[in-house]
Structures are given as C-alpha cells and as structure tokens.
Image (cartoon, rainbow, N blue to C red; front, side):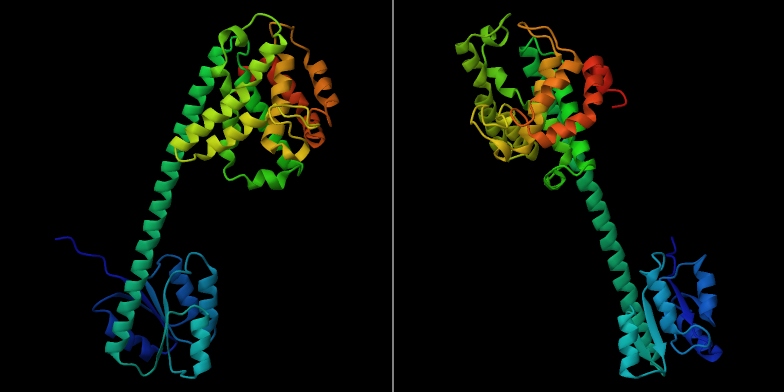
Amino acid sequence: MFERKRQTIMLVDDNQANLNIGKNMLKGSYEVYALPSAERLFKFLETVIPDLILLDIAMSGMNGFEVIRILKADSRYADIPVIFVTSRTEEMNELEGLTLGAVDYVAKPYSAAILMKRIETHLLIAKQKSELKNFNDNLIKMVKEKTAQISGLQNSIINMVADMVEFRDIFTGGHICRTQKYVELLINCMVEYNVYSEEVLSWENMDYVAPSTQLHDFGKIFISDAVLNKPGKLTGGEFEIMKTHVVKGVEAIKRMGQESGGQLFLQYAEIVAGSHHEKWDGSGYPYGLKGHDIPLLGRLMAVADVYDALTSARPYKEPFSVEESSKIIIKGAGSHFDPLLIDVFKKVSADFSYIAKNGISAINGTL
C-alpha cells in the first residue's frame, strides 16, 4: 500500500524545553524539525522547505518578527504559513505579527489539542491555496494554448483569402506580403521613436494588426477581370469601378465579422480596407477623410501601398527605382501622407528598399 508522505513542520524556539514538548506533541502526525535559533532555521531552509513554521517571537539573536520579515521578502519562502507561538500576549504584539504575514498567533501556555487543530486548519488552507494556484496556472496555460490555436486559424484564413485576392490580380504578385512587412517596419519604428506610440500601444492585440493588412484589397475579388486585369491604363469610368473595391471590401469584411462574432483581426482589416486610399489633404476616396480623421492604420497602409505600387511593374508603367520611389513618398508628406509617418518612413526607407529589391526572400530572411 502506498504510504502518503507526511507534512513537515519546523519548530523554532530558543528554549530547549519548549522544543522538546513541541516535538513530542507533533511527531506522531508530522515530520518535525526542532530548531533552537533563527540561524538554524535559515540553514535548514536551504535544503528543506516545510509545510508550516511554528515560530517563537522572543528569541536571543534574531527575534521572530525579524525572521518573518526575511521569510516574506524571499519568494522561496513567502508562501510558507507561519504561526507565532509565544508568551507575549500583548495586543500590539499580536497585531504586529499578523501584519507581518503570520497566519495565526498562539499564546503560551497553549492547549495541545487547540494548537494541533490550528495547525491542521492552516495546512489545509495552504493546500487549498496551492491547488487553486495550480488550477489557475493550468487554466491560464490552456487559455494561452487555445488563443494560439485560434490566432493560427485566423492567420491561416487571412492568408488564404489574401491569396485569393492576389490570384485574381495577375499584376500585383507579392504585393500583399510586401505591404504587410512595410507596415510592420513602420509600426516598430513608431514605437521606438515615440511617434503615435500611445495610440499604437492602445491597440488591443498587436499580433492581429499587421496580418489584418493582408485584406486591404479584399474588395478586388468583386471587380470584373476586364477592369482588374486590363493590360493598360484604366479609363475614367473603369477607374471609378476599380475604386468601388474599397466599399465592397469593407462590406464583405463586415459581414465576415458579424458571422464570426466580431473577431478583432477583422475589425482591424475593416479599418485598413476602408481607409488606405484616403489622403492627408482630403482628396482621397471613398469618404474624402482628411488629416487625423483618417484612422492611423489607414494612414500607415497608404504609405506601404503606394510605395509598393511605385516599385512594382504595372501594365501602364515600368517600376520606379527605390530611390525615385522614396523621393515620391517623401514629397507626398502633407498632401497624400501624414507628415509624421513620412519622418518614420525616412528612418526605415533602407529596409523598404531591401524588401523591394529582394522580395519574398527578404521577408523570410533577417528583416
């Protein structure tokens, strides 16, 4: 038959007679260490962690109050329940002991039966606290694992939908991955240099922000191939049709959000999709928003989106060089783009250039 391990109690008192009485009383139920001083207690604590400590107050050398201060200040011992067993019966002594973290205060001479019952009670409480902590730790672990699974699923869905968009648009290969990386670079730099950092840090979950940008052109799924993949410059009417991808994308993402319980990454995606073609001076579309009325995510996406369009080949143009593209972006400060974000862009423009030149290999590499 498996024998349950006995709980351990350390009895600390500089009176040998008290130690003998206490040990004889407890040894039938517990593993007992009878220690004549605080120094001996701390020496034993280096190798044995007890379930409870019975501690005298008035000891030569280090007294009980000093001992409990040290115990509670050390994370290794702070959770050990301490019961003061002392001949000091003044109310202030009892109050001080309890204030310092003792779980109980027993006056000498004590009833053996009452002391045993109090020990039993506090060991049970300590066990229940430990079990509750373990339960909470396991619950937190389970929640983190489940959250990671959900996050992975969400990102998989985003990637799949983004691939669908990119598959439809034969002229923008790699655009979605590159622009997501550009946004990540801008956000990291903003935090580092304290640019809109308060707003950035207020975002509920940063892990969803950059991935959500993959849906910024989701509405292009609803644009006909004749317009979307026209091998040349669009007419005025065709461009008006192309512009509807913004509203169509917002409506579709909103429906997805309603059917999935308002997932956070879709809330971010809706913001990005609906505002990445707005301009700082109010001349953008679809709503003609101006300045800070444009959501920060939209202002960020505008920089990333235009830079990638400039450095990429299109049916109506050859790609601009990274140098010329950077100049155009910087020149757009205050008209197309938020001037503060252009200051951020300047700090990471070399990284933008590296990605533009090296493509997916740069995204999967060190950047």
